[in-house]
Image (cartoon, rainbow, N blue to C red; front, side, top):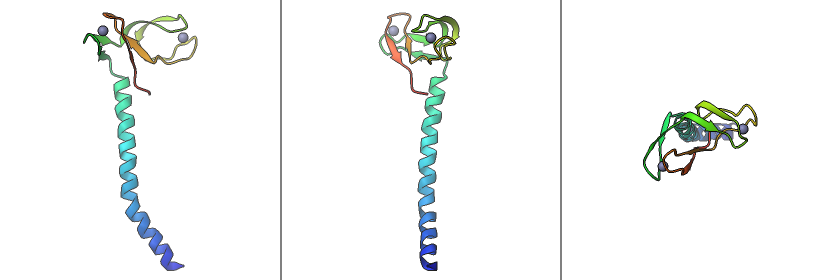
Length: 97
Ligand SMILES: [Zn+2]
Ligand SMILES: [Zn+2]
C-alpha cells in the first residue's frame, strides 16, 4: 500500500514537468493567437496591401460602424470572422479568438 503510494508520487513528479511543459505550450499558442487577433493591421495575402483593422466596417446583419474591426456587433452579437481588403476585395479569415 505504502509502496504504491510512493510509486504514484514518483510517477507524478516525473509527469508534472511534462504536464507543465504541455500547459506552457497551450498557453503560448493561446497568447499568440490572442496577440495576432488584436493587432492593428494585417497584410493582404493577395495584393500585399496593409489592411488596417481600424476603419469603417459593415456587419453581415447590415450594422455599419467605425473603429476597430474586432468588436461584438451590438445588433446581432457576432464577432467578425474575416477582414476585407480595400484594394482588391479579397477576404482573409481572422484567427479564432
Ligand atoms: Zn488585397
Ligand atoms: Zn451584426
